[in-house]
Amino acid sequence: METARPLIIKYIYIAAITIIFLTYLQVPSVALGTSLILSVFIALALYFAGDRFLLPRFGTVASAIANFVIAAVIFSLANAFVREPVTTGTILAASAVIGVAEWFYFRYARSEVTPATEGEDFSSFAEFLGEPAPGNEEEGNPGAEGDQPQEHQDQPDNPGSEG
Image (tube, rainbow, N blue to C red; front, side, top):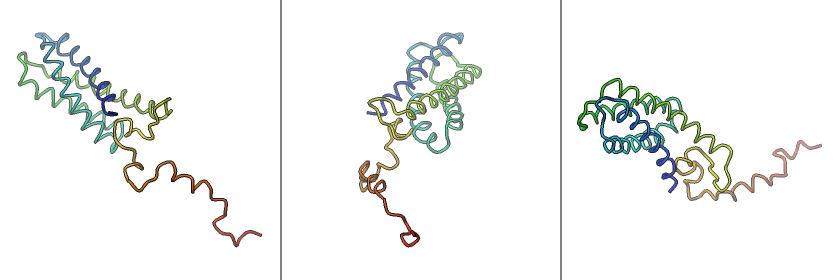
């Protein structure tokens, strides 16, 4: 259930941006229900493509830019399904704000992971996003108990050099 929290946070700010740009700032405006449904598609696409695939491989800035492009493509494709035409300026403005919001969200999520909050122990940014930690995906990895033999190495590597 660790994918629910980042996905809900992402949906909330994407829905707010979509409602502001498509429903309130554009004339004629897109219906509120249409904006909310469009936000669901954008949030899901950005979460799975941007957060789960691009972010671990390319970093925050490249993922934010890619999310801008993905959001612009989805807005452009949705233009065929809404009653009122969505202008290119609105598509670019809303996508740019979503890209910037994604960058801030990545920074927020990374700050949540780094100082290990109470009750939640995320060992990596990917684990915050709902993916398993890199070392915990193998069954042969004993976890925290595997660190103990390394700590108890009291003998030097080269015993013949002691004098």
